[in-house]
Image (cartoon, rainbow over all chains, first blue to last red):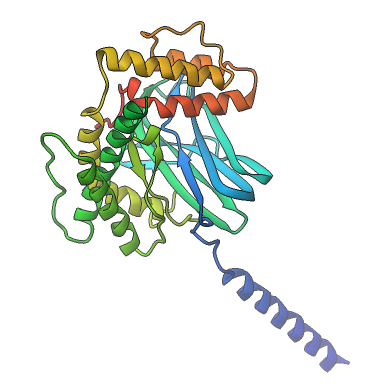
Length: 137
Length: 186
């Protein structure tokens, strides 16, 4: 009985280890979008209160698509994605999907910003950034 | 219209190419990036972008083909493998930033500022911009040719429908060269 419990515990431990290894070694999403698809990110703009950027995924054929948009602020020499995370838009079927991120930048003064976008078709995803621009909030 | 669009896209492409060139040239060579003077051609700009893309690839990240559809076609871009953490100091964004600064940035700046429209060319482009905004569902009546980018953005963000806001922002990006202030800051 004791041996059985030890065997059971060992079996459970082994299964957990296998699951852990499987999780850790799960392949990353492909960086390549399907042929005929592209990603574009707008250079951020502001109305003085919000800084905004959009991400668009466009494909020549219909797919289940998703897009995420974020804005990065340059602090010193480093880009920081600290502005409220990602905004996500998804479409179950279509040739284009657009997400836009609008962040309240009040109090940030004049800083350099850029848009960041990611998206794709399920596991076929990619990421890119826009050009940078100096904006005053 | 087609010609103007092509010119705009060419300008963007040159900027991107320049940026990419700078990135690629500096990648792994330990040499300073190029000093850019005078006019930058689209071919030069694209070459720079291609070198930057190769630079990112040499850092071990998967990169896409060059996309000329950004910022109205004036700027060339490529995409790269997504990192789990966008702030990862060793992630693809860091490689991109390093390659861009070293190989492309200066060429892109020259390309962009060499293609900013003035006078009648800007007026005609502005008229196209208004059509784009109106088609997107934006009320353009508050806007004038002298409206600032902040004022334009405010009108776009004030649209009641999210789809109109998204489409309006894409119009602004397509005609970004109308509002060049703040681009490529130090």
